[in-house]
Length: 239
Image (cartoon, rainbow, N blue to C red; front, side, top):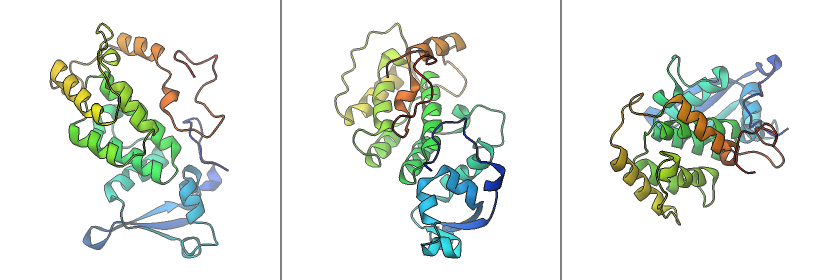
């Protein structure tokens, strides 16, 4: 069964079964995490295959990921068990940095965790609508670690247009190649200034207005034939 991509899917109680060990990083920075095999595989096609009994990881119950970041994996592990990244009542767009959003999306892309990719993509949208903008370093990192035409690249290209930040502005932004995204976000940061979390962003009414113009599922990763909503229930945008 393909891993779920929509947030209304949850692992059943029988998925909380055997504990397996996940070794992240190398050397002194290496960390070992224990996760429920069934829950882990519920979310990830990659780990379902890795922990298949035909492979040594499945027989020994140990998966080694030497090139991954323990901080990223710890957030992922927390999310698969709680559906949140932090033990906090604050909104995730306040707590999760652009850098970590990019790393989580790329981790999900590498390990076939579509729901994770879609959740952090929505957080990215919320941050930008709050007039917080990713730095040139973060955008460059994402461009270096995603494929041409990927959902995250296309989402960044769309978010970098001024009309998606302030619908009173005419859109003269010319984004024809990925490198243009860096310049576009730099211009947005200059235009709107440096914003702190929770200050100077849009009102709930503006967010609702923008949401009615967007079909965010357009930027989500799904298997063929799967969408977040039916065409009838979707609030806006085109398929």
